Image (cartoon, rainbow, N blue to C red; front, side, top):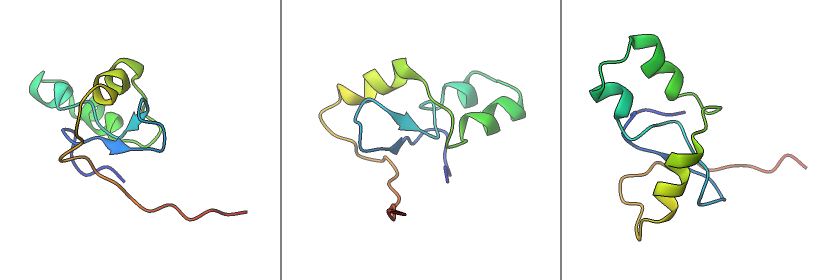
Length: 70
């Protein structure tokens, strides 16, 4: 699960990142619940995904292994 609101969790689709907003809520002074909610794996921000996909590197991003269940 997400550990840091500044670090995105990558997925197989480069345009879809989870678990962070790049620190916007943290620096923006949002309430604690909003900061906590953004770190949920279900959180999705298409604009943030497009931004991350355009970067030439993903240094600092989090990755977790996935085990297929089929």
